[in-house]
Amino acid sequence: MTTKRAKDPAPVKVGDLLEGISPVNMSAPVKSRISTRSQKRVDGLERIRLERQAEKQRLGYLARPFILCGLPFKPKKGQSVYKRINGNEALEIIASPDYGLPFGADTQVLVWVSTLAVLQMKDNGGKIPRVIKFRSGADFLRAFDLPLDGASYKRARDRFLRIFYSTFYWGEKGAKRERMFRVHFFDELDLWFSKDLDTETLPGEEFENKIVLSEAFAADLERHHPPIELSAVATWSDKPAQLYFYLWLVFRCYVAKDRSEIALMGRNSVHEQCGVDGYSGESGARNFHKKVNKWLAGVKAAWPECPASVGVDARGRVCLIIEGHAKAIHERTPAILS
Image (spheres, rainbow, N blue to C red):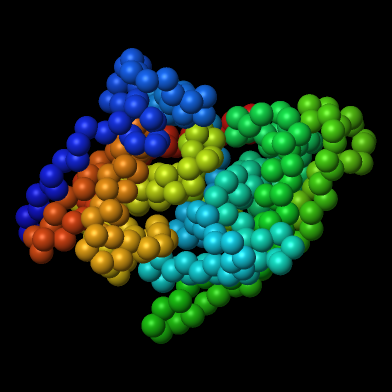
């Protein structure tokens, strides 16, 4: 079987991602002034690359269901049910009418809790502890480079509550077997919302933040806890589709044994695996091709050695081609969340 690369897209300004910054030369001068948010994203991409080169990555963990089937990027107004299927892996979320569906940057809550749980395994006999404690909301905000202010704390609180009040169904749905779990990921939530975000609790004080993990969530996290980069989660906090594509592609490159080709559209395609809505018909396929090129440019801005490209296979299908096994994350013991 032979493949050829698709026609290279026009030189990437990384579109909305970097607003004029080239992924090849992060320090290149920019003709037009960019926003503070975009500059922060450029700085974040540079940080990811430097941390990898120095083998000092800030590692975190994310429960496997949310790498294979992520949260909705932006649910429609009033949407209360979300479904994703990735191969045999399935995820369904039923929202609380009072708090709505978890989405987008709510992934930070799942990353935060998963990471705290995995870090505490060593001191818990190699078992994921059911009870997770942390000192203050400032710990959460610092982990993702969020401002230490009241607005950020309110958004963080809302994210925790959307996760807590939602019901999750996940597992495997195949032709011969269906094995699903119905859980609330957190059985108990006890959060203190202090006005002074940077104030830490003193030894013996009772207003420590506490989360009790559901038994099913703790058991699955104990079996599977793929590492991720906290700096990537922080950098793309306002670009959930780009972040998910990055996490998904890093995972696909890690588990790849040899060259693989994933069609952009159709069954088991990039479109299906990444849970993207829309893009129907020929024009939709062309637009999705452009979207994947943009996402891939973002990935390579953070991970230049990524062995993925967009090409055309022997049947004329436009595919995402992964040349083989590759690691974006060094295998090392992660530091404490900070």
